[in-house]
Image (tube, rainbow, N blue to C red; front, top):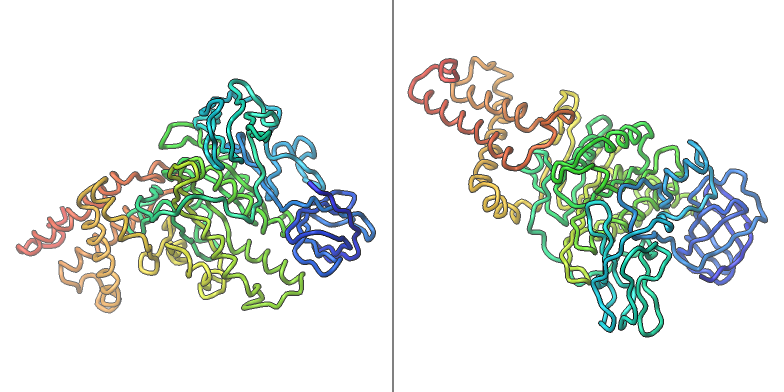
Length: 538
């Protein structure tokens, strides 16, 4: 690490200007006597513009600036799971112990516990060759094997076997380089892999409306746009609880503090339905609430996705959830404005779409450098102002996301959860995943899905007729269709997030829909034979 000193010459909110020579773009810096964390976002000769990720109140001209010579990084290694971090990967529990309930600036804490002892199991031997990204051993992190990845190429001269801590050498190579139990990785740089694969397996969420009508793929991306009060946060939290994945990384980006507190309290008590273990054992939470410095929101998304990629590289299936991408974009807009950049549509920076596309590209199912198959799936909520889906953030996401799950305000007001509009939403993964569902779950899956869509579409076309002539004016067959469609909406597509029905495995999803479709077919046959509608339904 090469430290480069400098001096503050200008301050404007979270933006600081310093005289400093020899720095690079996106170097991490410590600002002022409080040692606030910042990042160099522009260089003009010997003048650097620094974006500070902490509260700059009390900062004065002439105070020192110190560049680390390194980019903003995340420390990855054993101990990330079950932890709660802020946007700069500082563990909130240890911040509370040091500062109390109110976090002040300038506190640098390691994201990992370097004193904790782990039982290390080597998978390589002395004299064996090792490549960059290859697994050379593991420790047990809760129910998971936390595989350790080599950061060098070489021949192993010595390797540990037994109790270790993260600041101890785990292996030494013949060229003298050492391997440790953790590493630092720049948050804006995607982690490498051998090759990206096409999605072929579904991401089971336990939400019937998603799994049946708009299936998501492992390694795929989805956005949840919806206005205020449409249930974006509750839906994301339900998916985080019940999704069929190994690891969940959830980032609350600009969320209200009370919502995050309720979520944390609930997650501490819940059990993973797939493994029967405490839910927090497979979860990493990154919290950047609305009362935290707004500039840190921009970093929090990258901090979280880097940790998610790290577990993907071990061969695990990882789900990344962000709530909400709009608040991240607003932070980007605020930063861009303070840097006096040319604004684009609605004041967002002109590079908003390319920045979002680059972020979405970090999702995918890949063959890792270790030769394993791992995936990183993304489900990101969007909060368009006034529920306007033509605004720039939603439109930029639509160009890249593989699934669009529109949350409808009218459905939410009718207490329909999840409030996914089944006419406006879509999934580009449906074609690839139908074969999997038909083979693994039920051969009737695609047929039932098609029948469900047909009934809902016919109901929509009959609504105008019903408004004119009333239900009594319809033919019995149409009355039956309206009745079954209502039951599909209320009993099948609607789920209660606070009861056992919050999670519906695919097998149960098929059974429930099949029962309703069979009822429709039986009753329709009776009506065609002349049985009155009310009697046929009995």
